[in-house]
Amino acid sequence: MNKQLKVHITGMGGQGIGATSRIIARAAQLAGLTVMTMETHGLAQRGGVVVSDLAIGFDPTESPICSDGEADVLIALEALESVRSLPRLKKDGVVVVNSTIFQPLTVRISNGKVKSPSISELTQELKNWTKNVVLVDAFKDSTELGLSQSMNVILLGALARNSNMPFSEDHLKESIKLNIPSKYHEVNLKAFEKGMKYQTM
Image 1 (cartoon, rainbow, N blue to C red):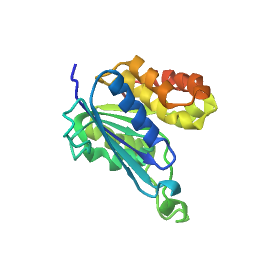
Image 2: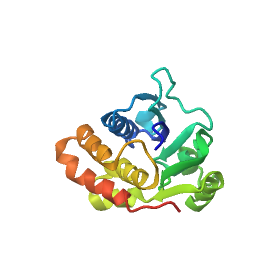
Image 3: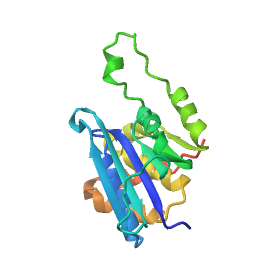
């Protein structure tokens, strides 16, 4: 098993990018691996883009930033952002993407003059880049669980099922419990299991 992994996480402010990064980082630490992280906020409080990069199992001097073609894994909590971040992903990398599109402001105020691409168009873009695309209906699943904030944990479950990570499923579950208040443990572990049901397209 390759003990090194670079991860690029992207989405909109408020979707739990930071929590996703912390859960992955702690899981790697539980497995005895080094972790470096870097988080970049756009207008996060207004739904702007937020990205987080992790370098796992590298020398501590290694930059966590995923330059073009360096990420082994791309996690996207918003479908449009998955395509914007695609150049960061290796050609044979894994992309785990929430199938929900949150329309940009330019689309919402254009009275139909500006069109947002469909999820099928976005998915085709992803599949043109890598065969390892996992499309996750995290919004629907989290709604069924009654906790919209669990979308990121659903994506982590899908990641665990469909990638060869240098830490275990149990490490991730333990990290979820360490990073989330105890009253939300049960629902988030259920969210993780929901994510485990998804497979590469």
